[in-house]
Image: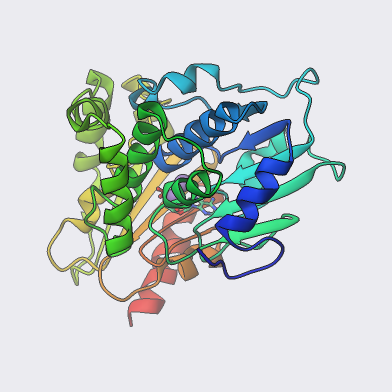
Amino acid sequence: MKGINKGLINSEQIARELLDRDNFLLLGHIIPDGDCVGSLAALKLGLESMGKKAEVLLQDQVPEIYRFLPATAKFRHEWSDDINIKNVVFIDCSELARVGDKIAANLNSSFTTINIDHHATNDLFADHNWVEPGVAATAELIFAVLKDMQVKLTVEMATALFCGLVMDTGRFMYSSTTDKTMNVAAGLLKAGVDINQVRINLFESKTSQEILLIRLALNNIIVSDDGRIAWITLPYEEVKSIGALGIHPESIINYTREIKGVQVGILFREISPGIIKVGFRAKGSVDVSRIAGKIGGGGHRQAAGATYEGSLAEAKETVLQLVKDVLH
Ligand code: AMP
Ligand code: MN
Ligand code: MN
């Protein structure tokens, strides 16, 4: 698989680099999603199967729904000097800052850095950048690199990658899903993924707090007068009052896009007072990664995000104006 950019730019080259080296630190992004968690788990297991040391470090906790993947129990959440690191691999991170401030503060130039990602907005921050914007999930890239490393794909690795694919493709229904994605999915099923176990853990194990959060989201959904924009607001105090501060379901924002005629859906989630995580989803031709980019974020054409510092009211005013400017 060929990449777009600088350094080692395809899976064969990355595979050779990983095989030639040892002592890896694998990093993912804050508020990790299924693609990030699954890709990290599979790469850790793959490297370990080749006799190498690989630690995963995530600033935030692994969401409950992914904890059935056994490797996630070994993920670390704090920097520790006892980790012998020579090489840092960034997974599903479009910018270095996506790893989180506490982890970024410990990174230094003595490490060789490798960036494996699928965001078009990736700024190629590492020594080696293998970025494939046409690919639906980073999990697809990890599948390719494990194959090129001649790693024997175990059920555990395959299940982790399958979770990544399912979550980043909207259960294989987003336009990013290609025949190649389906071929990867077929390879994973062939390796023994239990699709029933995956579905139950990812979609049929919601906690009552998550249901309350969905109720709050649906209660707070607004559609613009022209019907082309829908947004959900989740204020910190309201989320706190239902005990759902730590829950970030990837599906909540989808209610906006599910409305007929809506072209851009937005989620304003006040993750702490004055810090607003803004999620964007597009249906049709609007490129929301460009809108997210205007407030310091990024992502893909049809799914993007950003962090806005300020009040919820300001975030809404600024972002809705940016969206209206694009639509008119
Ligand atoms: P989310 O709405 O969090 O599911 O994110 C949608 C897409 O936008 C994902 O591909 C994220 O990696 C990306 N994204 C989310 N937040 C940010 C951010 N603050 N900066 C850059 N990209 C982001
Ligand atoms: Mn991600
Ligand atoms: Mn991804």
